[in-house]
Image (spheres, rainbow, N blue to C red):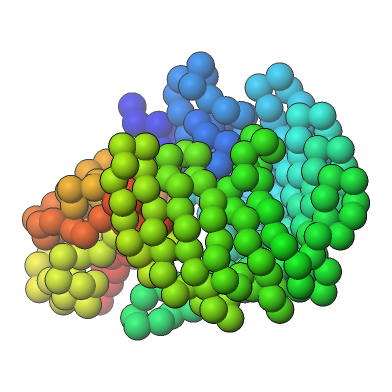
Length: 324
């Protein structure tokens, strides 16, 4: 049984149980919300509680595998996890690592980050993504303050020199450069350990002018956007027109007047192939199968990119089946 389906069945049971019901799931990565059946490959354990009817959210508590508290927060959706409301994360030593507020799965408002010794590391102001050129574009946070581990100011009132460390390895610098009015200015250099990419960028008034990254094999990638999601080979507008022409309402679902919005999550690999299809809200299996059929028949995609490098990346697309 696929783990996503197993998690979904557990959560369906949870919502039908008592108000104190809970489900424990194991998550594969510290920095991604991916569940796993193999505890040996798990990074932490997540406990999902029954929905809070008043707030319409699921309380979530995370634990390190040794049982220590890792974090707590809320999610408006659990498959995939869409965070909503305050979220607090902790280091293994019990000190607070991050505190912020989520809206529709995105950090919004002031976010506070801390060193392992408990001292304040940074204050950042986050803004929701916006639609630009028919694409959802993330907005870089404003850097309000930055301190060294002893508490001395490195950035004050949005001015100074910024050094960003990897949250899981405080010895690794992931970004370094000057900050003007809370935004990058001039040359920024850094390293993404999980992607294995060194990069150098030029900013003006907080806007990325140019970027060049290189992987461990020496391959170089030029870019003008830090991260781009997968898109259909002919553009997303062409994909939605294709869906309108080819999506068929299954007769068995029509007869029973089963409808609704089906979300299909799938991976686009570096070659542009779609795979690993997941029905994330499980309205109806037959409707999901039809949506997956249409995606498979659509052909190739353009892969997502991080710092210009093609990477495997998931995409979540809604398909609406209206009974009328």
